[in-house]
Image (cartoon, rainbow, N blue to C red; front, side, top):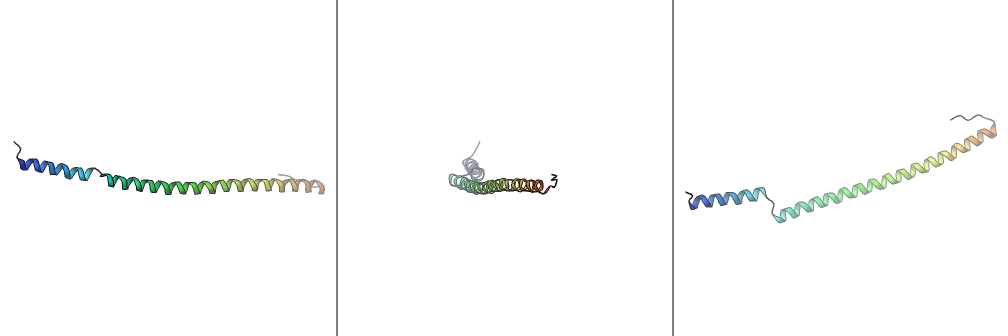
Length: 87
């Protein structure tokens, strides 16, 4: 048969295990806040990378356009000078 002391020991063990295994509401709130802060930082980084990538793509379009114009000019100059232009 269990004595009062045994029951007290069991209850204390359960309470101790509960404190070690489960989070309290303030602890959970703190963990969620840290996760939200981390996500916000990650989102900011992704946004910055997206902006840089869009800039890069736009610059590449400009360079291709300039290169095409330059090549057209070289072709026209070669024709007028009687030279053969090979790509």
